[in-house]
Each structure stands twice: as C-alpha cells, then as structure tokens.
Length: 245
Image 1 (tube, rainbow, N blue to C red):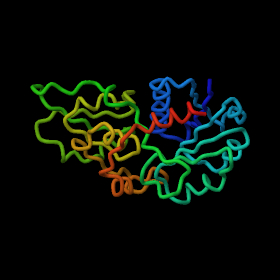
Image 2: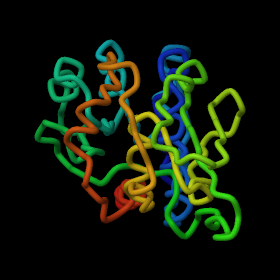
Image 3: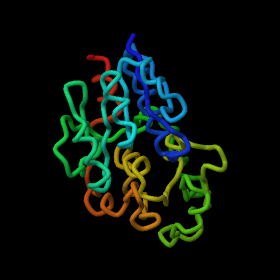
C-alpha cells in the first residue's frame, strides 16, 4: 500500500485546500487505488513527512521545500499563482520531484499537466430539482464575511435564494449543486472547476473576490479559463498516477 501525505498547515491554508484533499481522497477510493492519504503539518511536526512514500504539496512554501525533497518523492500540484510564488517549485526540482499543472492556465512548463481536481463526478451528484417546484438560487462562498459582497443581480426575480457559507458546516457543497437553477459564487479554484466539469457553467455567475489576492488570484482564471471544459476529473487522473507508482 502506498502511503501518501498531503501537506496541510491549517493556520495558513483556506477551505479550498481541504476540498482538494478530499477530492483526491475520494478519487483513490473511486479508482480502487491501493493507497492511503493523510494530511500532515510540517510546521507542527517537522519529521512527519518521513512516514510517507509520496508527498503532495498543493501550495509551494519555500521555507519547507528542503524538508520535502530530503525525505522522498514530492509532487507539487500547481494551479494559477503569481510568478514569484511559483518560482521555487522549479528551482527545487530533482529526480525525486514532479511539478504537476492542475489548471490549464498555469503559465509554466510543468512536468505533467492534468485536468483540474473536482470533488465528485456527475454520477455522484444529488438529483436536479423537480420542474414543477419553485426555482431556487444558491449564493455560495466559503468565507462568511465575503458572501454578502457577491452580486445577486443575475438571479431572476421570484426565485428562492439560499445563502451558504462555511460557517454553516456544509462544505464541500459540490454534490448539492444540481438542486439549484441559478448559482452565484466566487471564482476560486474549486468552485470554478466544479461548475465547468459538472456541466453547470450555463447556470452559474462567478465573480473575482477581493480583487487580486496574494495567492488565490481569481481574475486571470475568469479571463483565461472560461470556456475550457475538462475532459476528465483531474482527481481521477492523479489517483491513477499514484497507483502507477
């Protein structure tokens, strides 16, 4: 059995990284890969990385890179990030490392490119609403402090509006998206690619939250990736790559 570690310092990372972890965890089971995946925090336990055959890093923190490469194979999962933030992933590559693009707009020559990681596939979704029921709209965002800033002008008058954020403990909410006739959300990595992969783009309005953020820089995703329809769930692709180790 392959022991996979997922670098996850909770005091640094947001909820989207938790959803990405669960996406891969589910994909390993779905594809019957003989592997376990466990979150670890090298900032709390510097030697924890030694327990794994493979380490997945979905955020590149230069100060910890030496630990990853010293202790075994490490794959950096790279999405859209500012250039200065990504540089270290390539500077530290050696024969034990791979840099894997998990978004088609990554502006770097990575070792491997796969489709975006999504929590579930279409056959795992909750059923769509009955056509005779009153239509419902969903305003969804992980940050409860930002959900009020999402524009709702695209929601037709008369729809029932549900507002959902992480404070209600309902994340990941992916499997429930088919229930809604209209979806309004921020353009973070997980929500953007969920709607593309699950065929929900035509009923979804996505907005860049907070302008240009430090790492989660959303405007380029809206500008460059809109219209790209994934042909596979990248989580399944990654699971099969792990199984081939």
